[in-house]
Image 1 (cartoon, rainbow, N blue to C red):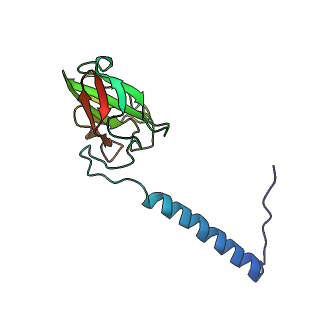
Image 2 (image 1 turned 135 degrees about the horizontal axis):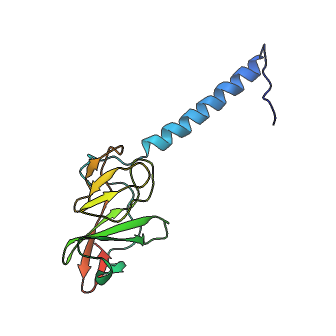
Amino acid sequence: MNTPEVIANPNRRQVLCGLVAALVAGGAVTTACSSAATSTGSGTNTGSQPQAAAGTEVAKLAQVPVGGGLLVDAPGGSGSKLLLVQPAAGEVKAFSATCPHQGVTVGVPQGGTITCPGHGSQFDAATGSLKKGPATTGLTTVNVKVNGAAVVLA
């Protein structure tokens, strides 16, 4: 393992290079933090939504259990997941399956609650709103509708 060299009396160039490196690193962190989605915790977080056209099928209605949910790949090739829930027969809602706390994929609802396996954050299955932290916001809502036997992006 290499041990970093400590310079007892750095010259002007070394000090300036260190400052520039620190500023660049700080700017990257600031940019990453400022692009994060914001929410009121109501389950209507307006973060990244699937980049696919309205009408794109995400699942068959029969695949989403009433009172339960189904994890599906988000359309558009983002690699993210959607959580489809059916609180009542024929009523389907969708949320980003990414927990706003640390990006872990949440589980399907049980007893009306969606739980993140990472740190135990809990969300209301019907609204996506936060019930219990450590997350500080609700799940991002994704607009879907039932079109015949399919669940499609609205």
